[in-house]
Length: 214
Image 1 (tube, one colour):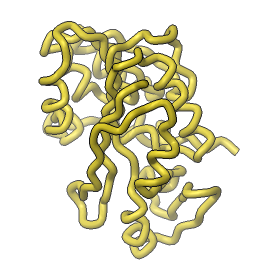
Image 2 (cartoon, rainbow, N blue to C red; image 1 turned 120 degrees about the vertical axis):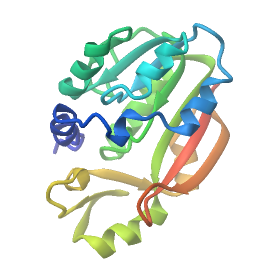
Image 3 (cartoon, helix red, strand yellow; image 1 turned 90 degrees about the horizontal axis):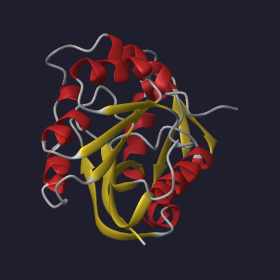
C-alpha cells in the first residue's frame, strides 16, 4: 500500500495559491535558524511547497535547492527564480552524499507511514554533511485526541493515521509520535532543540526540532 500520497492534495492547493496565503510567509523559527548559518551555505528545502522558505533563504544569500513532489508548487517557485528546483520524492533524494550544509523540512516528512519516514530520515542523514543542521517538524501525539474528536479515523500501521476529512490532506496518512519515539527515529543525529507547539488551530501540536548530523 502506498502511503506517501499527500502531495496529490497539496499539488492542487499550490496550483490555486492566493497572493495573501499564509503558505507564502516564512516561519519565525526558520528565519531565526538562518541567522546562525554561514553566508552562502548550501541549504536543501525538503518539501518546499510554493517556496516560502526557499525563496526567502535565497534572498538572504544562501545557495538553496527546493525539492518537492508536487510540480505545481515548484512551478510557482520557478516563476520567481533564483532557486534550483527538483521534482523528487522525499525518501529518494537525487543528490550525492553530504551535498548540503543544512536541511530544512517544515511540515513535510510526517506525510507517510513509518517505513517512508525512516527512509526519508536516512536520506536526510546521507545528503547532510557531518556537523550540519536539520530544522524540521513532526506531528505530536498530543494532537491525536483532537483529530479523533473531530474526524473518524483509523490507525493503518504503527503511529500512522488516516481520517475521514474530505477536502483536507488528513485523508492521506500522517505519522504521530512522542518525544521518545522522535529521538529513536533520528539515529545519527544529536538533538539541539525540541519544542511541542500548537500551530494556528487548537490542538494542532507539532514538534519543532533542530538536529545536528553526527
